[in-house]
Amino acid sequence: MAAPLTADELLKALGDEGVTVVQVGDWRTHNRNHKGPWGPVHGSLVHHTVTSGTAATVEIVRDGYADLPGPLCHGMIAKDGRVHLVGYGRTNHAGGGCPHVLDQVIAESYGARPTSPTCGNSDGVEGNRHFYGWECENLGDGRDPWPVVQYDAIVRAQAAVIRAHRAKGDEWGEDAKSVLGHLEWSADKVDPIGFTMPGLRADVAERLKHPVSWDPTEEDDMPMRANPTVKKTTGRPAGEWLPVPLAGPLVTGPADYSGTVTLRLGPSDNCPTSWPGWSPSSS
Image 1 (cartoon, rainbow, N blue to C red):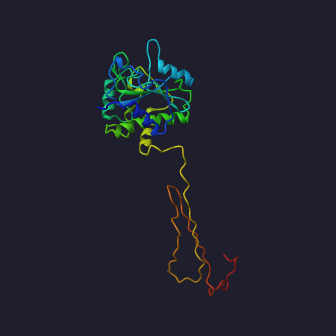
Image 2: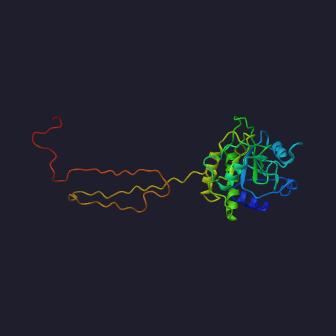
Image 3: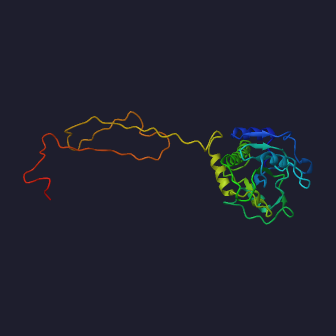
């Protein structure tokens, strides 16, 4: 059982995770709480909007439609990676879904995916009280691309919520099984289209292994290499080892590398360079 984050806690969590946030109007108090309870929360639900154009999409998810009043999510994740917070509290996004999926999310007991849902909006358990909702700007036709910055923001937003709940002592696991796609919750839904939920959960779980400052787009520093040289030595006794002095480590930092040692041998001063009966043309 997890109480919802406060609006301030969510805002801070997103900012700490490196998300660029746009606060839309009175988002902190814009909700559907008069229609039912908000909480306990058990997960975070990812959707696509079937819209194009950020400004129009923000307006739709904030205000909703005549038969489905807004807000339709908590945050709308735009193509440019900005997260527009449009409401907070109970929102009209999850609808009805499968009770066995809810049980698996609460227990975080499923494998790559929860069991396929068999219930939907008309015959399922009510999910608006139990899930944070993230609408992501995309036509949902399988052709509209997901820019890297947008997908990264989706990952960061999910990680932010999980970190914030874990910091409060809630049992939200680092394997990100609290993150669902709408299609995994309701038999009526197909979203999101364009990436897989097991893949998204894996990316969120990977992010949770790192500090909030981690940027997966930054390249690792190239390792520093040393090229030690050894003073030329002649006439070393057989079986005597030659130490190679190093001023520092050969390689520092993570790297995939190989080492090469070159040894050049030559005859000693008193070693004959030719023998009777031998010539370069001999076989």
